[in-house]
Length: 446
View (cartoon, rainbow, N blue to C red):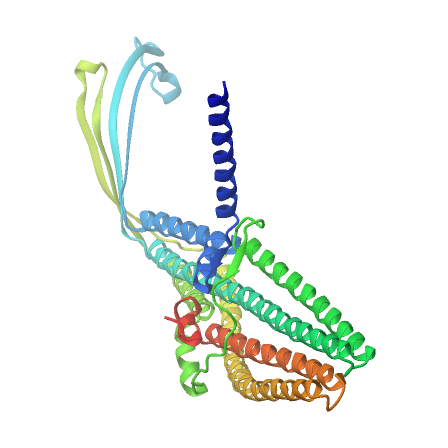
C-alpha cells in the first residue's frame, strides 16, 4: 500500500509543477513591435473593415453597369396553355361561324436575346462607376493610413510612459543610495537627523512618482490592446524603446508635389471629380439615339409533337424627343462638381499646411532634443558632484535633493523632446502621403 501511495504523490507533485510552468508560460508578456502593432490595428479597426466593404460594393455596381451597357442579355421562356376565344370580341362574325371557338391548346418554348449596339448613356454610367470604384479604393487606403497614424501615436504614448518608468526607477535608486549614505553618516556622527529625514522624504516622493508612472504605462498598454483588437488582459511589452533617430529634413518644394500624387484623400477627391464628369456626359447622352439588337427563337405548336421552329430578329432605335428631367439632372451634377472642386482646392491648401507644420515641428523638436540632452547630462553631473560633496562632509544633502529634482526635470524635458520629434516624423509621414508604405523611411527602420 505504501508504494502506490508514493507514486500518487509523485504524480500530483509533477502535475502541480507542470501547471506552474504552464501558468508561467502564459504570463510571459507579448513583445510588441511598432510594425506588429500597425498590422494588428489594420486588421481590427472598424473603419478599415467598413471601407473594405464599400470597395466591394463599388465593384458590384461597376459590374452591374457593365452588364447593362455592353453585355448581352439572354433569357428563356416556355409555356403550355388551354384556351378558348370569343371571335365576336375581335370583330369576327360570319353566318355559320360560332362566336366561341375552343378550347384548344398550344405550346411555346423560346429563347430571347438583347444586345445594345449604341447606348452612350449606359456606357458613360459604366465609366462613372469605374471612377467611383477608384475613389472607394482611395478611401480605403486613406482609412488605413489614418489608422497607421493613430496606432503609431498609441505606440509612442506607450514608449513615453515606459521611458518615464525607467527614469522614475533610476531616481528611486539614487534616492535609496542617498538615504543609505545619510543613515551611515548619521550613525558615524557626521550627519544630522534632518539629513536622514530629508533623504527619507525624497525617497518616498520618488517611490510615489514611480507608482504613478507605472500605472500610466499600464493604462497606455491597456488602451493599445483595446485598439489593436487584443484581449485587454493580454500582457504586453514594447519591443522598441523610445529613442532619438535624427532625420534629414526634406524641402517643402519636393515634398508637396509628391504628396499630391500620394495622398489617398486627395486622389479620392480627384476620382470623385472624374466620376461626376462621366455622369455629366451620361446625362448629355440621354438625347442621343440608342441602338439595340434583339430577337427570339423557339418552337410553337398545337401539340408537343407538332411544334415548329419560329423566331424573329430586329434592330431597334430609341430617341428621346423631350425630357425635362435632364435639365434638373444637369444642374445637380454641376453643383456637385463645383463642391468637389472647392474641396480639392481646400484640401490642397490643407496638405501644404500639414507639410509645413510637420517640417517646422520636426526642426524645432530636433533642436529641443539637443538642448534637453545637454541639460540632462549637466543635471546628472550636478547630482554626482553634490553626492561627492555630501559624502565628503562638505555640505548637507540639500544640494543632493535639489540636484535630484533638477535631474528629474531634465529627464522629463528629454522625454518630451524625443516624443515630439517622433510624433513630428509621424505627422510628416501622414502629410506626405503613403503613410502605410513609407512610415519606416521616416522612422529610420527597414
